[in-house]
Length: 160
View 1 (cartoon, rainbow, N blue to C red):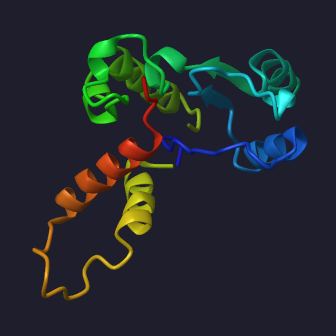
View 2 (cartoon, rainbow, N blue to C red):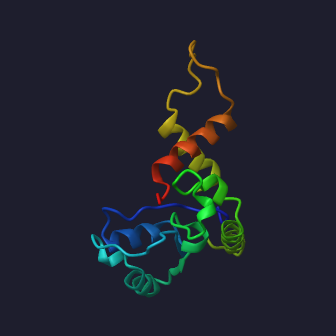
């Protein structure tokens, strides 16, 4: 499982519980994808504080705001008034971030698999997929995945 990328949210966890969860799963790098790595509600998760605490536990902190953040400066990624993740996922910054994380995992770091993430999205947006539906055309797995990404994109994409 050395080439696995896990995702985790911090909301609702104390920073100690958060770090304990990272340690239990042998996480050695926290790739922070927040465009603005600060929190008024949870100041322990501000970039400078979190980075210092993680260092105490030999967990590396790296900001990937430019590569994966939901607030990109380049306005061409906002064709509908919100960040189009499908379009942005083909950009040089995004692909560079993917290559960087892939290289890290190949070196033994543990960075959820794409399939696990997609399954989570499918369960969220299409929990009844595969059931007989006489009123709608049955979609292929890839069509369901694409539709789930678009629904999630419209929900969480940064709006301008």
